[in-house]
Length: 408
View 1 (cartoon, rainbow, N blue to C red):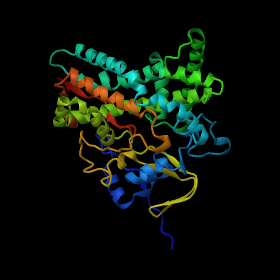
View 2 (cartoon, rainbow, N blue to C red):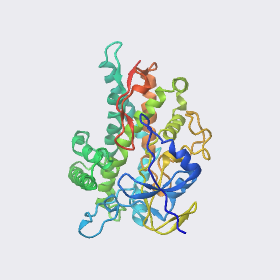
View 3 (tube, one colour):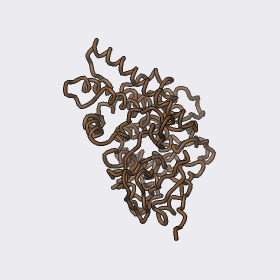
View 4 (cartoon, rainbow, N blue to C red):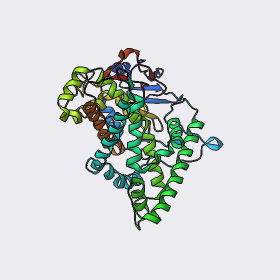
């Protein structure tokens, strides 16, 4: 006798929190691999345990589908192909691009950005303080958590900050910030590719006149032009699109959430202020504790496989959930407790395996300096309102407070 297949909704995050949803605790215990109805109406296998999610990210049988090709559509209804982002590249192509780009985002290679990020953070704090009357409050989101990640991204990658009104709406659409249809999302993807293509044309012309490779886009273009180079011009276009999709809104929202967590744990914040050498360890805990995402990692099985007794067929979507995996008690002691001194801390906030987030170290560096400068400049900072009264943006899985009223 065949039993009907259980299909559950993707667990909802509790209002007024970044997550992860409490329901994942039950799923980890009782249904570690379960079919769920995804927000776009498709189904996918949710993977909630740490070991399983980590293995799924590294499993060559599970690949990231092209945004323009999933869910699959055929015939006249099929959208035109889009360039793959770095997350969607496969095989030799991915390995070739990864070997070229990954070293640029290594911990040591990014040290050149440390003084630049500090200067930007200090400038934003100074502007916030200058614009605040005695006894008044300031909004840490609008003044600090929101502008800093974009400035860092532009400075590192070589994106024009002054073009933000052009590319940011497309980026937000791709992250589902407005509940758009698939057609509108794809339209935003093609528009972002067109913008990247035009930007690269301008960089190519500039390189002919000044010959300097001062930003990452220009460095990658130089590699693409080099005889026998490992990159194509299209790979550089994909790089720009990838950085905008992965390096902007996620960093803003995670930064706002991380600052809220620190401000609502004043004892741990005080200890961190007294021992700032612990900030790097604290950053790893904030990455584990505060979800970078809840359930938006779509992989597709290329062959049949079985996991925890569930038969996953070729073509099925598989959704490892880092937010749940990072709270798995089998992997972390007392996982629902924030411990800024937790070590070791092998979280998978950036995924795992060949497609682990290229910009992970840049995110770490940025968050560490964000906290460092804040505690140096405003050692007495605290929330100016009760935490439960703070308004939230809950339009996407990347949930975050819309404001953080603070005083110091």
